[in-house]
Length: 146
Image 1 (cartoon, rainbow, N blue to C red):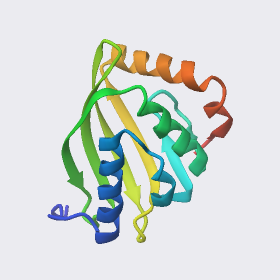
Image 2 (cartoon, rainbow, N blue to C red):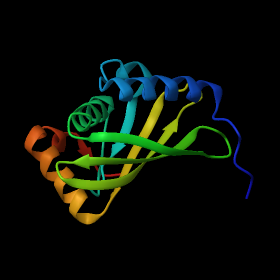
Image 3 (cartoon, rainbow, N blue to C red):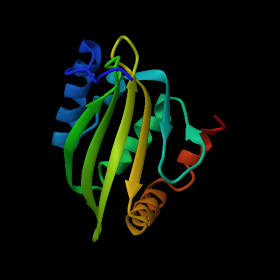
């Protein structure tokens, strides 16, 4: 097993900096610029992934309106510097959650895969209910079997 790099790939670093700035503002309006057109989103609520870019944009732009007190705590990178894990915590209504964002970038720094994992179960259920209330049947139209 090779050691983890001390830095993320330079192109991915630029996109991560843009991502963190958008999250800090609570405005993901510029997200499309750092997401590959064929990007995949993996929800903690669904077994099947969603694609392409519009599904990822819809999911992330919606969740930013649900999370309160959102904070990233740690960042880990793969050996090639093109995949990162961001550990976070947030509130969904009155439920405290912990989670991770697993983000994979291409060589140009565009997000090609964004996967979210959340615990505990009651927080995940609360998140699913809030996402469902906001998105209704919109997001399921993007599902595909991977």
